[in-house]
Image: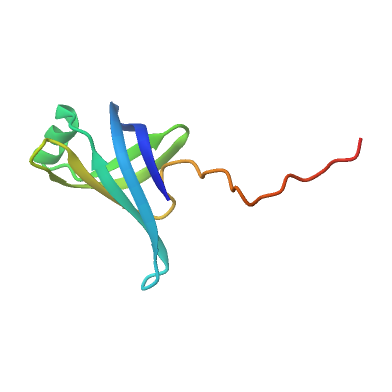
Length: 99
């Protein structure tokens, strides 16, 4: 599972590159990735703020800022349901309705 696209972090419009996986040790979904360079988000982290909310479409999830990379992007992590909407299941067969 992954998502690349627009998001909101604490009121700032950003672009993110996120992916996730099920962790068998704790039985939870772990997701994370990178926020493309955005000075306001880097400033949050440098001022000591780590806990933030990520918004993608109508989904809001708690996340944690980790570090600023050499290019000015910010690493972000989260646990639980990912902030991106689930992809359509290509194996799902639509139900037929009687008319």
